[in-house]
Amino acid sequence: MRVVRLLLGALGVVVGAFGAWLLLSRQDLDQLTNAAIWLGAGVVLHDGVLALLTLVLAAVLVPLLPRAARGPAVVGAVVLGSVTLLAVPVLGRFGARPDNATLLDRSYTAGWLVLAALTLVAVVVASVLRSRREGGARGPRPGGRRRPHRA
Image (cartoon, rainbow, N blue to C red; front, side, top):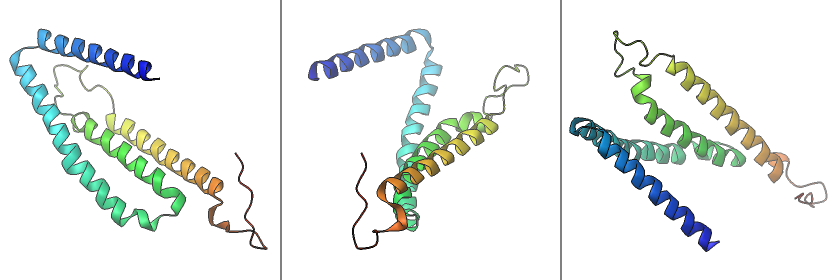
């Protein structure tokens, strides 16, 4: 198992180094500066906005949810928040140009809404499955004995 991890790690380093070489060899300084600013802003937005917002939501809203829905709700919020931050440029149509119709050529808002709906469905399904697995709000069976756990 350790050998597999080392090989996967080495493969990741090689692929990352190749990507860095492609980035540095095929872009001019202005493009590299813009990419560095975007990557830095992504870290700041994620750690300063998304993580903070997730912690506040978790502290305020999660205790109001049923126990089985808490984990899936937090996962759904993190997924949707991360994707939303990543999609800000296309959702805001930054970079759209009237002389090039191939840039930002679809309804990214509709795509985001579909993703949000699918995320919500996944959260609900996971919550229901967890609730059934844990016995839900039904509580113990008459006589004080719990149902046997099915594997």
